[in-house]
Length: 90
Image 1 (tube, rainbow, N blue to C red):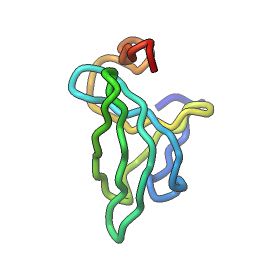
Image 2: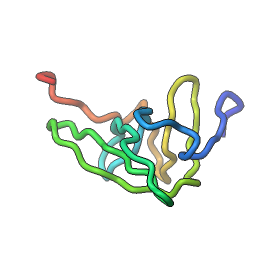
Image 3: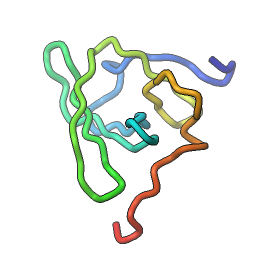
Image 4: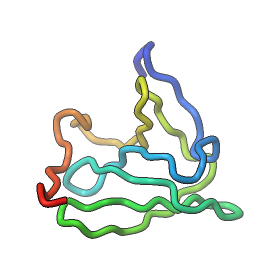
């Protein structure tokens, strides 16, 4: 982790917060849509205009890089190198 990055947990973010998540192929935008007893539900936007949901534990770590919240993922690329290209109509 960089000196400019800090780490918090997912339960510290309010409903509606946006963050970056890694899909199988690229990085995408997501928003916190619901906080349940033990899980947080994330709504992820796909490049084709569809959405899907992910569920993560409340204590999942989040990296804060400047003003961006990033859900960590074990991969070689960063979100700057492999961000999903969204449909320009949206």
